[in-house]
Length: 152
Image (cartoon, rainbow, N blue to C red):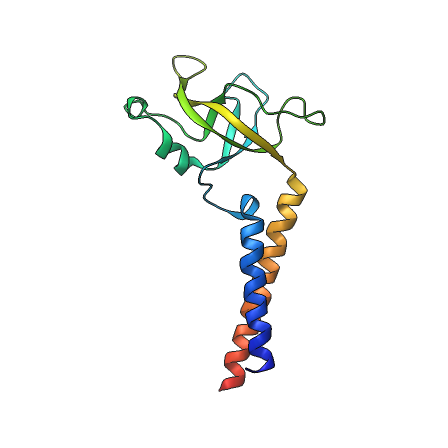
């Protein structure tokens, strides 16, 4: 095995490992959890950043007859920390859909979630991980292209 193949193999393992470790930050589809951003208004409690597909899947059949808007949700317990007392940061929540709610009769229905657990995400860490993964992926693709150019 040549040195270049070893480097590509190690790089591939590192990328796969980082994808697994940072899956909460880079996954476009959150399965088993929902990534939300808090709202501070007289509207639904949270905006769904990732996990709308999962929300649709766990919604009970009795609520599917309503035209639910899964882009925003109501929660039974508002995630918050000492540094973010209003809960307007990025959070990952796990829970169950227990009902629906809306602000007024003219607004769309939004699912109501009973939160079982939640954790806070740091915006800069979130952005940094995504930038790091894109840069590493570009380097990996460039190395692969150079390998194909060398073999011609």
